[in-house]
Structure formats: C-alpha cells, structure tokens
Image 1 (cartoon, helix red, strand yellow):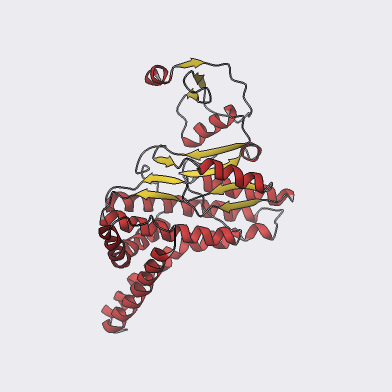
Image 2: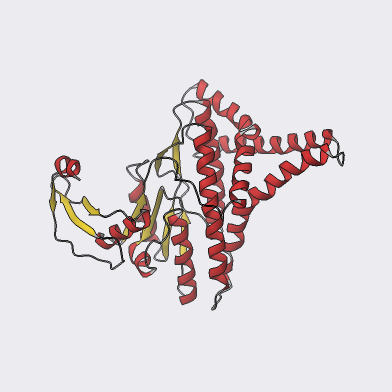
Length: 342
C-alpha cells in the first residue's frame, strides 16, 4: 500500500457502496489523483472471492470485468464487451479467449494449440447456449445480477461457479438468462512455464471442476426444478468426466495386451488412429482464422505444424491422464494454485 500510495498518488475517499456483500474488514478506499477512475480498496486478506465482493461493493457501473494479474487486455476488448451487452438486454455474462504468450518456442506453440482446442469447445457450447465454463482470467458480468446472486463464493473456478448460480436463480425466477462467448481474443495471458507447472495447473483446475460438478448436481436436485436448468449439467459432466474415461481406456488397452486378451498390433493401431485424428483436428484449427496467432515467419509456421503432431503424442495424453487423476482425487485437498496469484 505504501508503494501504491506513492506511485499512484492515492488519497483516501469516502466510499458510497453500491452493494452490501459481506466481506472481511475494509481498511480504506483510495482514489488516484493521476487517474481519477482508478480506485484502490485496502482490506484484510480473505481470498479471491472475498476480494471480488469488496470490489463489487465499491463499483458503480452496470458492468464489471473480472481479470487477473497475468492478463493483458487488448485496447478494444472492453468496448466490444460493452457493445455486446448493449445489443442484448438479457445478456448476463460474457466470456472470451485469451492468447497464451508463447515466446516463440515449440512448447509455446503446443500450448497455443491446446488453447485453440479449448476455445473451439467453448465457442461451440456458446452457440448452443450451454456454456459451462468461464475462465477466471477474463469475464464480464452485469453487476446487479452478481450482487443479486450474493456475489462470489468460490476462490477457485469462481467465474464458473458464479455463472452456474446465476443461471439457476434466473431459471427458477422465470427470467431470461443469456450467456455468450466472444470468439475473438480479448488479450494475452502468461503461459505456465514448463510441463510440470502446466500439469499441476490441469490437476488443480480439474479437481475443483469435479467438486463444482457435484455441487451443481445437488443444486439441480432441489425443488423447484426447471427442465431447461438441466441442460448445462450433462455438458459439464462430459467436460469433467470425459478425461477419466479416456484415461481408463489408455490404461486398459496395454493391460489387456499384457494379459493376452488383445494383440499389441491392435493397441498400436488404435493409438495411431486416435493420434492421427487429433493431429488432423489440430491442422484444421491452424487453418481457421483467429484460432491461433498468425505466423509471422517460416520458422513459426514450421513450429505450429510440428506442434500439431507432437501435441497428440505427448501433451494431450498427459493432460488426459492428469485430468483423469484429478477426477479420482477430487475429494483430496487441492494443492496451492500454480502460477501468479490473482
């Protein structure tokens, strides 16, 4: 706070809270003399959800953007988001992909392809109005809807958890609820350095996704139940449990071959077919404008083509095994969040 006061020329302001969400003690609210629109809230530590609720209490504009310290938004991202909300009065939440900063390496090209696959899945779900996941790195909400839903409750996958509660409450009240996914990238984010950090993030996020799925199923089982409110649960279950089914298949085939139940040639043929289909999918993603950053030199294009094949031979099978293990160990305490702290 001392550095913030000096560098931003902060002066204490008398807040007029727009919300009444319960939070840990707020020590002070300050406004920058350099940028009058910049407000700094000093509070006792209570986790990510508590900090977001404190910000919601101070915010006054109808829209709020939730992001993290590793995110660098493009200059037009918030303008495009505001236009989407203005065009659709029933729009409650808006998500958008963030491009991972790769540093021009083969590992970075692999991460960009994995990101492109996630973006394609979210875009498809958004078109069918069953979007089940909003990244904690970027999302825009209507502030009034968030406050009416009692704000944030989860420190992990907080935007996804809030999205599910918003949908459930609006469906139960018979109010229209629109959630969209803007396909164009809203900015850039730091890619996890190294395979170990990336695997730790997959494990951490999938454990929380499994716990959230159990919470949402329990929520849907409580009366009154609306037919439409069940649409997102199957999609969320597929996203969460599919890696476990794939991981079991990856372990079962070699085990059956060792037991003599099937031949090793069948295992090799099945593995090659899955890898070939995945590589073809990756190559198609490379041809879609905006799916991955445009290659600026031949070396970068070559790395993208090599990554389209290598992704299916290492990172994606690794991700499947790690996420499947995350489903099985969801009841265990989750490790600390890898990467920069929001």
